[in-house]
Image (cartoon, rainbow, N blue to C red):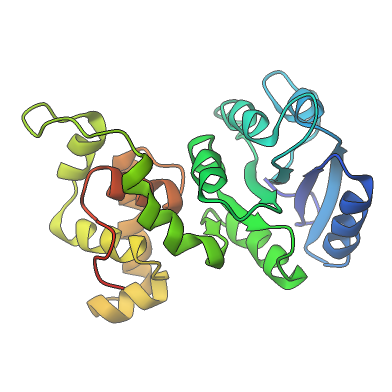
Length: 240
């Protein structure tokens, strides 16, 4: 869902006008990216992008966390919940000045496809927009490992194996190779790196990743990795 000229359409949601202006300047300097919508709080964003919204198509939303009226995590959940055939919901990258695991996990649970700190270099933000638009997901490098290590302390206790929950059942349905790929995804490997480690073509890895996402009902890689940790397929300290 890109613009008629092939550009990625971006929405900026932040209560600070100067921040939005800075982001717009960086994004609009790129030939393949275009800011098409701005909002000053989560409520405005939901009205523009949520269920029944009349706004034109948007591909990626840069969403602040702390805003008046409605915070960014609540807005993210409502916007991503509006996903429907023929009108897919935009993908959301949550931006914050707070490098806290709680925000990362909450953003993922709200349906976000990415998480970046506001002080990330411009090129990292631009790369994140393009990555998320391609259907992958990003988490700020400074937060990734701590988030995954932290998951076991904040996730609810899992059901007993004799009564598997849907996530466990979905993981059990994965083939041995798909489980191998998911474990490497959880360790932060790219498709290229997974292919090299398993001695298969990158195209084959992409096929496996697509099947993993479908079986787990995950919107992107990050949500699939969270499922891997939730179900115990991957545990903190497993490999590197």
